[in-house]
Length: 163
Image (tube, rainbow, N blue to C red):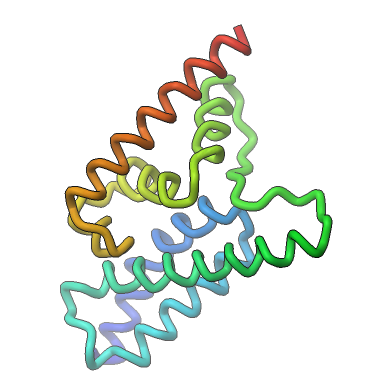
């Protein structure tokens, strides 16, 4: 990978990786650090990463960094009683449905949340998601299906409560 190839990767993939991470952890500065670390690892391993696998490599590294970050934060939260809620998507939604969708997504476990965001928000296919999250394609399909069922139940419940 040349310097120009690396710069093209930064231009093409940094926004997508950042959006994925910030949606999961809800903290912009931490998301920027995770994305920067992912690109740093790409640079270090540039001779080992196949050009057609760069995007998947970046998302995989960022995902693993995010999991490590969340684990560290959970440990810190048990000792520090902050009122901060981790992993929440915080957007000002104008309509109730959007608020309910975001609330329901935030209530999913981290794996389910990542699957939904990668598939429905970022538009990755099952194989790419499997590579990113180190799951088989069939596991991705099953876990995503279960996550969507949970989302459906949560949305029905939230819509009844707000009606």
